[in-house]
Amino acid sequence: MKSIATPAFAHDRPACTGILLANLGTPDAPTPQALRRYLAEFLWDSRVVEIPRLLWWLILHGIILRIRPARSARKYATIWTADGSPLLAISRRQATALAKVLAARCPGPVRVALGMRYGNPSIASALAELQAAGAERLLVLPLYPQYSAATTASAFDAVTAELRTWRWLPELRFIAQYPDDPGYLDALATHIRAGRAGQPGDRLLFSFHGLPKRNLLAGDPYYCQCHKTARLVAERLELAPQQWGVAFQSRFGRAEWLQPYTSTLLTDWAKTGVKSVDVVCPGFAADCLETLEEIALENRQTFLDAGGEHYRYLPALNDAADHMAALAALIERHAAGWLEFSPLYDSNTLTVERTARCDRARAMGATA
Image (cartoon, rainbow, N blue to C red; front, side, top):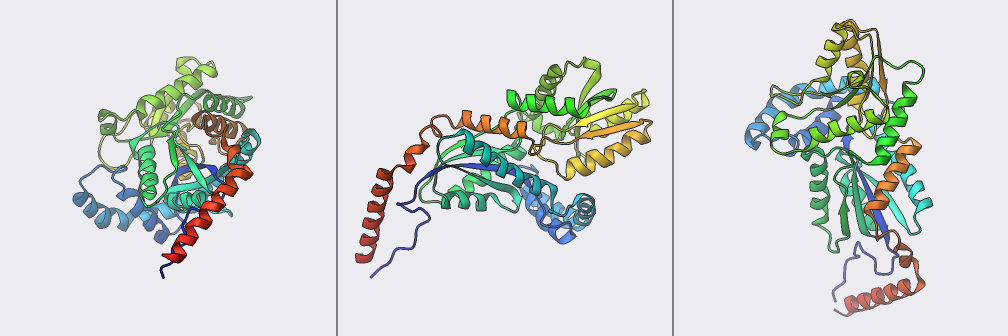
């Protein structure tokens, strides 16, 4: 007599709409060992580094993973908190806050799960959580406002790779970008205005994560979307063209990256008489090593060493109420036709039907 293994899907379980929040990720600890694991996963992604695999494997394992983990661990140690990685702690708060906003605004059952592209909690574990909750509809929101193959498309790869192992696939929707979303732009403008209240710097710098220039030439829209976000926010702040600028941070390797480079522009501004700057990173939904260490600390010193006098980093939107409201509205628009009908899943009739189907399936397994 054969028995049937307990399926991941239960026929008598009410369904829900699953929301997967995805972000880049973080090491488990600020140690060289943890950084080596994290960087090995991150830098081996062919979406992140578009170099022939054999050549890149030799460079990655022969040079980078021998040197960079210890250096990165020291940087992470400067921002690590009692709650661990700032990115992970903030992302968890975002997931919790977003679930509360959606529960208050949507009539049907919605479940929010957090998954990191690299490290923990993984995208696979977040999807398993949603599957266990009965998610038959899945909306994926990578927290990258501006689209890049190195970030957004990589998250899509991870989601679909996991879904390939599922017997019953959920209906799937994917939010690819939101660089000009009104709620996101309004939240940014409000946040920047509050951060600069009383004594704004001479210039406002919108600093985005950098990418190799070849990504732009290959058709990646990231560069254009970064400029669009900055322009639309500057318009909301009623800034004159000479009062703000756009630059790109975190250059790595010898190839030409998107320009101007943040450190170079800050140096040029200081040398030409700009005494105070405010810096914001609109491409980051949550503060992380790149904003808290590279922008808030390293680039501060760069600007001061070049002759600047006042440097202020304006934190990311993180789990601010208007940011969560903007994301909830974004989700509602992309889940149109789902959330309105989700109360049907709670009906007694549907539960009875599913229970009957489940009983029949078990009976068939017992007699097989």
